[in-house]
Length: 109
Image (cartoon, rainbow, N blue to C red):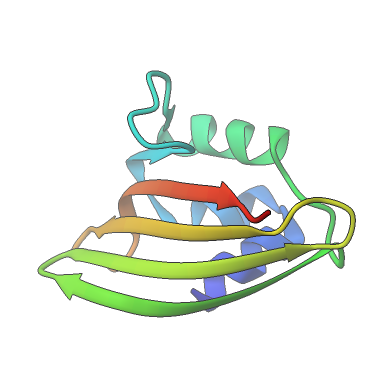
């Protein structure tokens, strides 16, 4: 999670690709019909939806683990946007990088 937050802060392609396997799939929404695929697809999608550093804060906790899958609950607070509650489902490869990442999020009222 520290590396994810660092990539979110820097938006540097090398920081983003370090998180994922070469063939990883990133679902920006559950059941996403066009997930971001592979390093190139993930970097392009990430940068198209990037947040400016210093405009957000993020707190998280690990909800559970099941084999190679982690469930992370998060709270994202933005300066000029709605705040979000998040659930991330992350499937890891043996080397610790994500091979599949799915975001579930909803804006707070």
